[in-house]
Image 1 (spheres, one colour):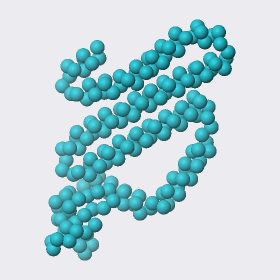
Image 2 (cartoon, one colour):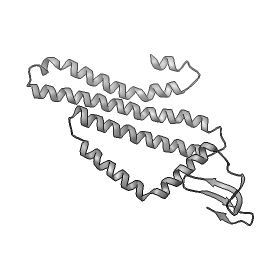
Image 3 (cartoon, rainbow, N blue to C red):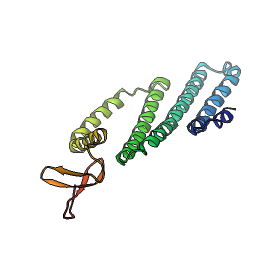
Image 4 (tube, rainbow, N blue to C red):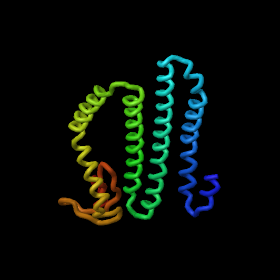
Amino acid sequence: MIKHLTRKTASDMDDRLCESMRAPIELIVYTVGVYLSATCILHEMSQSIQDFCGKLVAAIVAAALAWAAYRLVDIMCEAIARYSHKSANKLDDLIIMLLRKTLRVVVVVVAVLLIGQNIMGINITTLLAGAGIFGLALAFAAQDTIANFFGSIMIVVDKPFFVGDRIKVGEFSGTVKSVGFRSTRLETPDGHVLT
């Protein structure tokens, strides 16, 4: 019925949203339905089995919600990409790709941490402390890369130049050939390419 209603709208984003949310919602409905239909049998079993089944259902529902959020990231990034195609700057597409990958990783990590800590009762404090130390070591090792990355983000946000513009950087001048996350390439009037 929802599909029938979404087909009547002018936008196809609601169709994509409906289609991507269908499988996670079905998983939640089936899991809860099986659990509720088995409650009369579960009451006859030991408390530990009842607790395990309750935790298993909660973990499946949480995983299905994380799956829905993971799919929602794709739809959100696709909607943003439609607007970015209107600009001449191709770096916007790279940022959307980076945003998509980052949000996917965040959804998966948060889901694993929530399911592990709150539902399964696994102590993840030491894992988080180790991840913090690893992140700090990685940040020190990649200072130049991180500085270049944030410099590239500032170029995208401020948009001081585009591909094809003639600019001067220090003692060099030339035409912008490409703008990437790590570098910007200039072609000088005598044909040399500078990074």
